[in-house]
Image (tube, rainbow, N blue to C red; front, side, top):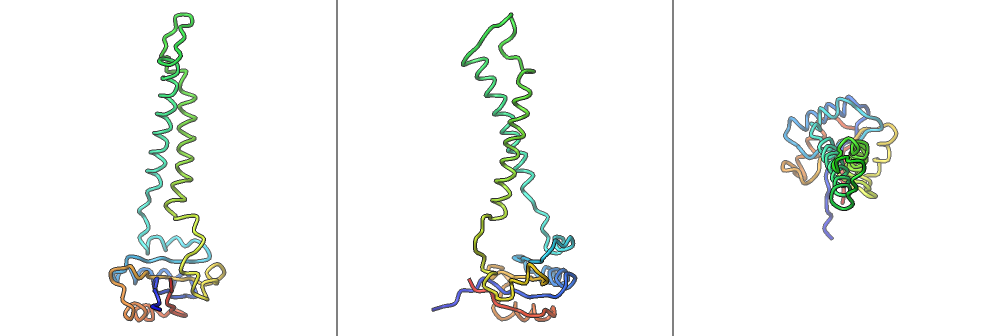
Length: 177
């Protein structure tokens, strides 16, 4: 049986070492990196270059669709499907549509935010290959991990662990799939 490899993971004692290792890996040319820590590290997103976020665009699209759906639904009902001429008022009285249009905008923006966040984060994820590393359980307590995936164009089964060893980690582990 051939052992399938997901990547290589290095364990560090402190957040500074993790951030420095992430910067060094980016400078070396690795792009498929991921870091795990027990608490958020602000500098880590800069070191990993994680600034491309599509969630605001998804929420904006959801809000626009919700606003249009709310407005057009009311327009259809009051002008086409069930027009009532009461007191000579116009059938298309847009000020009456504002409340429902606003509420539909907020509703669909919120739903698209939740669904977009789940989709972009890949959730729900019940299993990840990083769980195969025995010491990875410490990632939620007091250890910091940097992994380089095998799908990275620069990944080499020998050179990548050697590179991670030069960053002075506590341990370098192979991550099996």
